[in-house]
Length: 387
Length: 240
Ligand SMILES: Nc1ncnc2c1ncn2[C@@H]1O[C@H](COP(=O)(O)OP(=O)(O)OP(=O)(O)O)[C@@H](O)[C@H]1O
Ligand SMILES: [Mg+2]
Image (cartoon, each protein chain N blue to C red):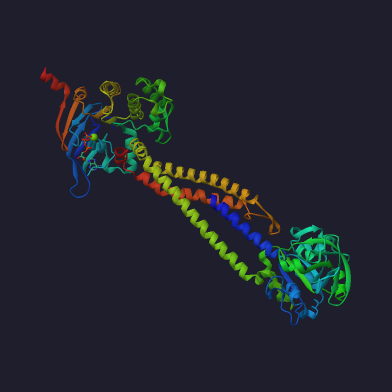
């Protein structure tokens, strides 16, 4: 019981944390114009697809990304899909960040901050400053990149696009996406600024989509593919192995929980059997006074119910206590799922407690049936003699 | 059924065999009858079958063959539920040990036969049980736990419990066996008084010949048979 609450919270906590870490920094679904020669975003090795790839293989990306035709119309169509929560346009390209003598390769991403925040959980990712400030003069850069070029909040940096256009920005926001490649190469600017640097006019390269649920990503991406020839990628396909791991973790958790329940059922049953043995004489006496087998059975089933309810209350209490305790032990300097890391990430939910409690009560009832039947079948003469 | 001519107990060729195969033949054909309001002492050596006989008559156990008729009910014709209600309505048990339930007070214990019945004790029954407790000298011990009583008091509480449902028949298996002679005599006198006052039939197993002589009738059991059955008064007449 206790274990069920604790384990459910722990496993759910771990998974939410992991998925947050994994997906929080990337949109659920990304729509791009198919780029000849360039592999799609998520099928590239490592995290971040093109955004990551470019850093290491900058020279290969000399060909500029293709624009999405009539993107406003496409965006609206996607926005109208039932499971879509938000769509944000961005114009991306490669370039350099320089500050003083330091030059670092970068992915320059032009976004509308308010829109972008709807498709990525950036709130938790911002370490310093304000992402909303990102515009034609203000940029957001990763913490690692800031370190590499020695920039701080308010520092001036220069961005050089692969079209050779140079622009000066002020660092208005530092973020930590939880992924090195993003932290060391991504630079967010305002959408018009990036469009100008990449000579795109009003065009964009990418539409980032957020589903109403994490796991709607696959369906959304299928729907988009059904009406457009754009390159659509979703986090689920790109992280198949990760999802498989989660799934097997869930199975393992279910097995552990089933075992725990089984163990507690045997626990209740054995307590009840001991109780029957202890009370054998009293049962015999009650029978000699005219108590029926059914009455005796009822007494013990009620007893089992009591044990179940007691166990449920105690177990939920201790389990919940442990969850909150574990949640409050922080690991200094670490983050997980975008929040300060706890020793074990927990996601406690009243749902687990109610579920586990219901199960405990049912288990208590069921596992008292056998001892109760035993009690009711006791031979009164034997019971009295032995007592 | 309240006809005085109906015997409260009648056994016909009562046989009880314990265990499979040959086993132990504890009763070898007992034919016995007992009138309403009679006070019968059952005597006999250890292992002769006295307790077995009482258990059969009390419908606590089923005979291997033969029949038991209690107050007109043929027990072999009753199912378990029927036996339970027969025990609850017609019979009271007193054992060598009090077997009071420690979780309950003396009063609650004494009311137990009424509590296990549908509906629980009525106001009249509660008054009756309280009166009985007073009679056996436990008026000020009603709220005590059984463990707080002396051995004699515990046995007296157990007697009240046996009487709570106003049974026609009380089966007492060595009720004084666990008491010293003074307390034993006290308890015995009490049973005798309840017998004469309320007309309840008593069947009482005892190893104490002196107490047995106080009964109306003595039944002697030997090796699963009744070997003697006589009225105490008549025998005494002959001796005197
Ligand atoms: N449950 C049982 N299983 C097997 N044998 C039994 C059982 N109960 C009694 N017996 C046997 O039946 C015979 C009669 O036993 P019972 O208890 O009726 O004797 P008793 O006259 O009451 O003796 P005591 O005076 O010692 O109480 C004995 O030989 C005993 O061993
Ligand atoms: Mg005996």
